[in-house]
Each structure stands twice: as structure tokens, then as C-alpha cells.
Image 1: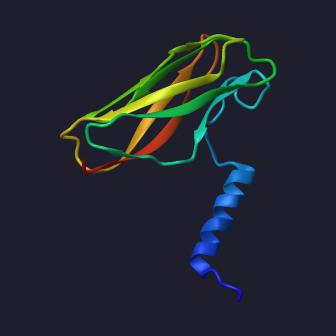
Image 2 (image 1 turned 30 degrees about the vertical axis):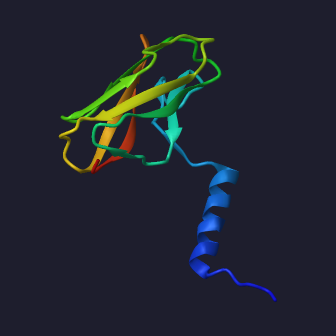
Length: 140
């Protein structure tokens, strides 16, 4: 006897397969010299984490360099009141690992809801860029 899968579950499995196959990146606009190979972007997953009040979540981001971009990139994380955000490395030199972790910590009394954490990347030459990370604070 053959079993059938309900359509919502089939759609969910299909969506997950597409995400696994193609990825789902959230990328900043170009920094450095936009529109050239002397630029950089900050990339992170498009996943929007739900974080309980008082907990800490670590999210991986990376600095993607254009072929001719060899400057160091300084990173800074900013978050709304009652939410703390920081990067585990704030200076990424050419040749360093491009991966960085952003720690996000809503305080115990942080209001519930959706928020944006902004990671700014800048170099000594060119335009800075911002990556927005959407997070949802949920009840502990």
C-alpha cells in the first residue's frame, strides 16, 4: 500500500531542498570601490534566528573580497537598546580567514519582537557597507 504525503509537507521539503542546493545568502551592497574588483561585501545566511530573552546566539558572517581588494576590513556590530551585539574579530586582514561570528544577546528585559542588528564593514580606502541581520526576540 502506498502512502501519500500531504501537500504542505511536500512544499516544505521542496523548499528545504532548494535552499540546500542553492543557498540563501544575505549580502551587503559593495564596500570599497563599488562596482569594481576592488570592492568587498559582508555575507551572512538569510536565516532569521529567534532568540530567547537572556540567551545568546552566534551567527556566522564572512567578508567576500573582490579580486583586487587587499585592504583590511574593520567590522562593528550595532543593535537596538536592550540587545547587545559584538563581532569575535573586528579587523580582517587580507589573507585572514574571512569568517566572523556575530554574537547577539537580548537582555532579560528586552521587549519581544523583530529587530535589526547592523554589521558595518569599512576599510581605509573607499565606501563602508552594512549587513542587516534580522532577529526575533521571544519569551524566555
